[in-house]
Amino acid sequence: MFFPYKDDNPRVLIPYVTYGLVGLNLFVFVFQFSMGIKDPEAEAIFIYTFGLIPADFSILTMFTSMFLHGGFAHIMGNMWFLWIFGDNVESTLGHVRYALFYILCGVAASLCQVLMNPGSEIPMVGASGAIAGVLGLYMIRFPQARVHVFIFILIFFTTIRVPAIVVLGFWFFNQLTNGLGSLGLDTTGGVAWFAHVGGFITGIMLHQAFKLIHVDH
Image (cartoon, rainbow, N blue to C red; front, side):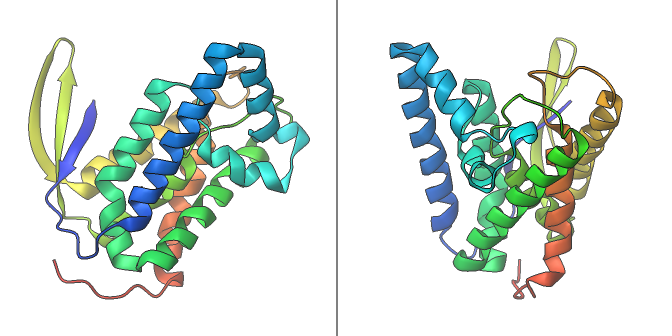
């Protein structure tokens, strides 16, 4: 199992948008978590109101769902990946285009999951789809950038440096195979695998559409 913890890819711009996204997601999560402590029913209503429910699709929740999370592991994993890879993508695109890119990837990811499971009544929440787009563009733009990863094998672990294309290619393969394996199964409360797949592919497609600036590394 690969788990990245940093890369050797120097940033060019100060990633203000990435900082803002991490801060906003954490702020919403703290608000949501605090609500759950005081009134679990109110938190459930909040999630069902602002999470994306495929069977009750709305444009609003397609956006608001990107800033909700299902628990500590969910938000910490998402923000960790965004922190590692978001700064270089923001340096490549520039602040404004990066913000637009992030939202477009999140929207495409949501639509992909809805298309694959349109009858689901379980709210979809999380920034995973948008962040998957960041990973997709990073892999195409910086395939040989060295990423430091933990490798877990049973009770043993070590650290190595591997090219981004290996780490992120393996990540995408894992999302795709798990998604295909979940077809036709009851995945209530599970992972929205196809949101990850859709976001990742959208990130790759937008690599050319955004006419990326050249950055020397």
